[in-house]
Image (cartoon, rainbow, N blue to C red; front, side):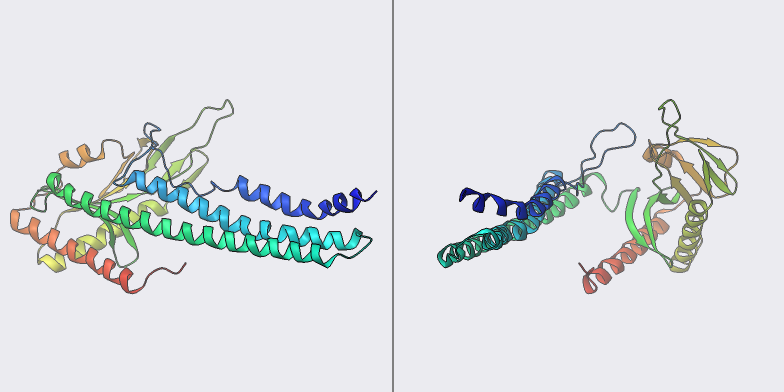
Length: 304
């Protein structure tokens, strides 16, 4: 039965086939889309459509990069099996397997180059859209506006998530994400109790978020006083999105919130008074501080 000589070598392709199935199943492992913990709706940012296209382009790059070696090796692996089971050696057939693998290598090289160029074009479009969106934000939040928000402000120990400047004070906002456990009946438990020295979650407690948020606020207050030459009212805010907050006592100088309606809470909260001169000095100092981080990242790009 000569046909067995061509059928039996397929056994050697089963491991490659299993690897290909795993690769296809994991092609959407990286999905940057996130949903709001408040209403479960997808959070959209400037350039969100391009971000989604970029995710799909990276998924395609992963698929082609991982499937390429598997597919190109398949003819060679099958040919080696044929050599074991064939009664006669046909060098023309072996050359055909080698030529097929070479063609597949060229095809996947072309696909990888195409994916790389596609990602570069999407990144350029995203950068342009973000730049325009940042400029348009000044229509709503101009630099002369009494409210100003900074993101990723470097401190002496790390990065402060957000700093909000209002006419009535400066707020250091740190965000902490925690997974909500489930009860035995499948109900989600989302209540956290704030105590003077700890956060009591369902089943565990933490002290570090309170200490880190207070430490960041104290550092910023000292740094702004040094830069501006006079005290600046600063308050720490710890946001726990998706949690129901219950207070049994809060550390002095700290506000713990769920994050919902945070902008309204901060606009109504009065911890002091910033006159126009001090307000402008604080904003100028924070702009300079965030620019230092941008210059550092430009000179020291993250390794891939």
